[in-house]
Amino acid sequence: MSLTVDELVAAARAKAGRDDFGDEWFREPLGVLVDSINDEAQLSAMGLDMTRRRLTALLVDRLRLRAFQEEHPEVKDVEVVVAAEICGLPRTGSTLLHRLLAASPQLTSTASWECSYPLPFPGEGPDAAERKARAKARMEMFLELSPDFGDLHTVTWDGPEEDVILVDRSFVSMSYDSFYWVPSYGIWLRSYDQSRAYGELREWLQVLQWQDKTREGKQWVLKSPHHLTAAGTVLDAFPECKIVMTHRSPVQAVPSYASMVSTMTAQYSEKADPVLIGQYWRDRFRETLVERFPAVREARPDRFVDVHFKSMLTQPLVEARRVLGELGLTAGPADDAAFEAYLEQNKAERHGSHSYTAESFGLSDDSLARDFAPYVEAYL
Image (tube, rainbow, N blue to C red; front, side, top):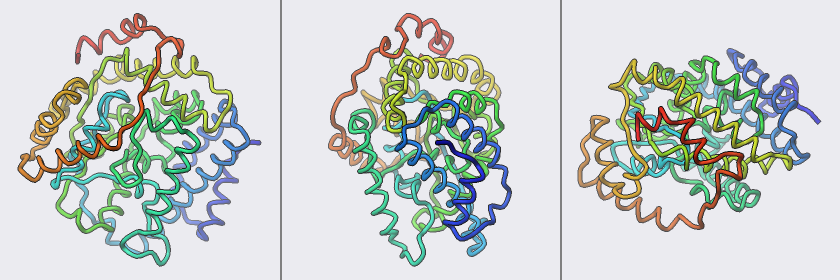
């Protein structure tokens, strides 16, 4: 009832029919993750099976990426320009902003189906029909396992999605301590140099851009709260990129994310403790925002754009146009039409409501206000 790196690597090589990973630097983060899962996650039998399959599939993609680059060496010459990484605390309006900006004809973003299946299957045509069908089925299965998740976060198989799902293949990702109770992995991640993971993110973007010729001449707008853990590395990896930071009071954002994490973790373990989850994410975000982030921001203030949650709720079109301008792009009639069309689509996709209390996760409004007072004073 445990995982090993060697077992996962062997299974991936057998499934892919290849054994060349190139640089195997990924073994260190994968090893930390596997040890933490074995020691802390308390997976159910189904959770263990799902995890084994998931990690094996990600390793297979690493093998297939190297094969794809060998078959199409010109992929490595594709010029990737990242205009923005949207990040902030989860539950701060970043998803709405991301999907609005991704609708602009001047920008492009990672789509959900291609984050799950970034490489074409053998014999698959340019329409990616098989990958799209699998992604749709995968989304439906996910929502079946977590029927309340759609009330927390709008899920679409063919819409813009977080690029951190591509980063998952490096095993250096906030996805893992969001889906599993693996606090030792999360602590390790906070001090790990993520530069190689972001180098691989660029490689994945090259692959996606090479496959879709309509992306030529467009800049990427990406999004994930994970990027808060490596804001300086993001700015180094993508010199033309600005970090668009969404802001909301942690008094609301932290319990909201704890609720989402509890829902996701329940897929894999029947023993997840919501109080431990709440306290873990309070500490994780406090360390990031209050202790680590200010120095990064102060060193390169011109690389940041601020967006407030309330503004995204009350005037999303105004904010989308403003951010586009901050990225050096001018919003025109085509952009406005795309933004308005997405807002109508968003109304149709949203359903349900998200109810939670801080006390459900061992937190309180007063303690959160004290813990995050320096951040609130600086940005809210």
